[in-house]
Amino acid sequence: MNAIKLYFKYINLHVRGQLQYRASFLILNIGNLLVTFIDFIGIWVLFSRFGSLRDWNLWEIGLFYGMINSGYAISEAFGRGFDLFAYQVNTGEFDRTLLRPRTTVLQVLTHDFQLTRLGRLMQGLIILIWASINLGIHWSTFKILLLLFAVFGGVMLFTGLIVLQATMCFWSTQSLEIINSFTYGGIETAQWPLAIYNRWFVKFFIFIIPLACVNYFPVIAILGKNDVLNSPVWFQWVSPLVGVLFLFLSIRVWEFGVKHYRSTGS
Amino acid sequence: MKAYFSILKLRFAVQLQYRAAAAAGLFTQFFFGFVRVMVFHAFYLFNTTIQPMSLEQTVTYTWLGQMVFRTLPLGGDSEVLGLIRSGNFAYELCRPLNLYFFWYCRLISKVAVSLILNGLPLLFIVCFLPQSYGLIAPSTASSVVSFSVSLVGALLLGCAVANIISISTLWTLSGDGVQRLLPALVMIFSGNIVPLAFFPEWAQPALRYLPFSGLMDIPFRLYLGTLPPAQVFTLLTLQLTCAGVFIGLGLWLLSSATKRAVVQGG
Image 1 (cartoon, helix red, strand yellow):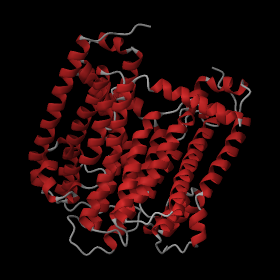
Image 2: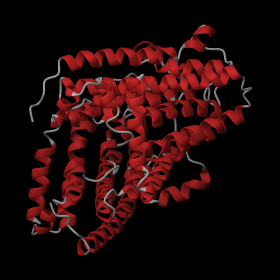
Image 3: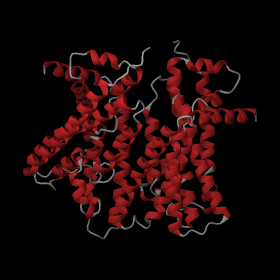
Image 4: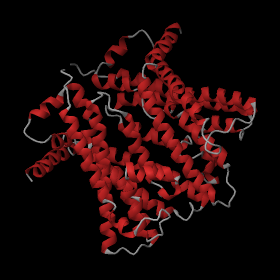
């Protein structure tokens, strides 16, 4: 419990520090908001031409889009420390981390916290709310809980990816860009219902990087749609747990990496 | 002039060293392209309305977009940005060269190399994809020629825009407004997110006269033959005029920034 208390203390410090530059903070957030909004213009343009995507409409895509982007934005804000991890290894700063009597995960996680990513979160939320109003979903308590659970699962999954990427630094001081393409490529993929893709491609995002579990399956349950992938309804409701599991496994890989860490010596 | 040619040659050799980064980039570009191609397949599958482009044309446009993606002005020259932030910019001022064109040459080498290390391999890979997932051949030999000529115009224009992003860092150290907004405009209005032909009819004239269509859309339409090859000279004039305006703006911004530059010592 002490670790969690300490974590929020660190975050609090970062937030207070960043709010010192209020004008710059505002401009950055508005910038971020505009930039990510532009992506959605692309989706809108396509629907204005085609009308529908198989049996999906614009608002349903908005739900996918809003959820995945909100989850990513939150994980990007919290996981920034791992994002910058290559720098810590290159400079040897990580040696100091190892000397402190706290877990490495906590220390690296609290290395930085990016409040400015909230622009992306705001945009995700705006699209999410806008989509759900237009869809006329009957929001029962369970559905709201499932939505929050799915976004939470998304945060866990993306954080897991960021941790995995950082772990690669133990073997190559150049952080490998491959994971990055799964993160950004994953967002791009999950903005659309997975059912539209080729089956082997879908399997990858269910079994290897389980983005489907924090996005596609919960949305199917919320919309009450028939799943062409034939997933059982109970699974749709518990699937975001897989995101938590993914983070757990990623942290185990990270701990394995820490054991094999050799300082650059600089 | 000789000095600038040496810069081009030297930077070209330096950039060619980053082959590992290029390989990772190649994977990302392939992944994004493939997702988009599958999304377009899904859109066209049950489509009954007439679209501005056929599926094969849209897929080809998408791949061409991924091939030139790294040449788009989505950020300034990262080394120049570093020089400005660290204060080593002061050394740059000592060079017996025009700083603007020095930076411009660096950018030209960078995009030329990324065409070779990213664009060509991707072209090679895409040729092996099954029909309607890969590239269609250009309609005539003259459309290949006009495409190549127009692509050169696009690169010259792109580097002029990228240089503005570098220079904007001199004005505000973080340079965030321009560095975020300009790339976002480039992404959507070059045709990178969705081919410009899909935008609503009322937006078409505006899109055509914005400088950003010269970055991707114009050369790609020449490739597909939807713009006649004979128009290439008019279009090239348009691209070069836009490039000239951006270069003029950049020169002016740079000279007024260097006049009031305060180098932070240390």
